[in-house]
Image 1 (cartoon, rainbow, N blue to C red):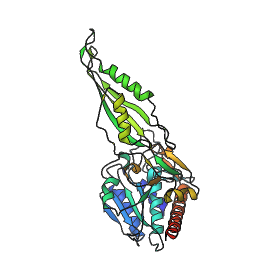
Image 2 (cartoon, rainbow, N blue to C red):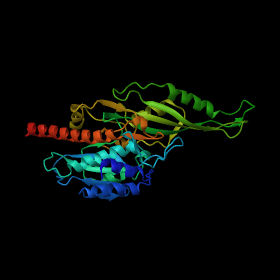
Image 3 (cartoon, rainbow, N blue to C red):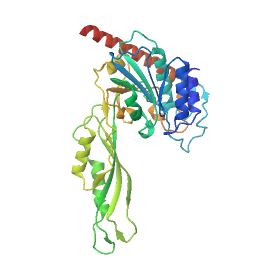
Image 4 (cartoon, helix red, strand yellow):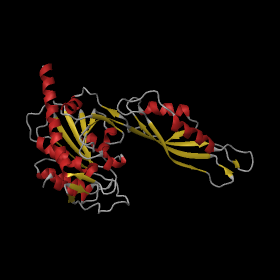
Length: 357
């Protein structure tokens, strides 16, 4: 079975978030067929290179097997992996099946190498699309210690050197109820409107060189029970995309200092990330011609606490779209470029070891 055939088999098998077991089994069988010893935790598959040496630094290769559900605009069967004129159609082909099979094949290519200056851990994980607790978060404690990571997401094989984080704020403006026909009460909607205008217009002092400005968007609002009652409560939700120049805690502190509404149910675990250009992994990517940029979209990078880059075949603009597709040559190029990246990373580590010793 080739990498493209593996991808076709994955597409043909439903793998919505929290229900990835069948596709995890497919990936595991493919690895084992190629001589790789695999581990399984929940719907996550992981393995290490054959000649793993704990004295060496370790690189994690990670991508996800879960998909979103197909939207109503699909004109094709999302689970029918057809190839037409070199284009492979199907749900999860671009996000992130192409990355998965490219990383799997790259790992297989390096699995038996005895001359590497680093170890490789491959983790093909679940629940990325929902930032779930049973994906990379669940399996990470079972993995050998890793020092840096490549996260496979569609970036057209360019180097996402930074990625925005996410906080979802559930805010409540508290007023006082009264009769709408009388000058009574304190309208919670009025309080919320002032706060919403602040979210719309506020500019943070610092701007990220790669990620630009923090973006705050009010996405849900709810208030009132009937037309003649001044509402005493207005609830609204804010999507906050954070950058590497503020921690999520710092961003939240600025917000709470500037609005009247109460903020509750804040998740701060999806942190922004950035890797230094001088890090051997980032240096290897730029050495082979990958162009660095800042990514506005979220991935499992946000849950890793080591230096990481996001690189993969396919285009982010196709993710979660109807009639999702990836070009066959993009997958083939993905394998080639991942292998080139690992070879260059190895060379840089060897040079640094020689300089130090």
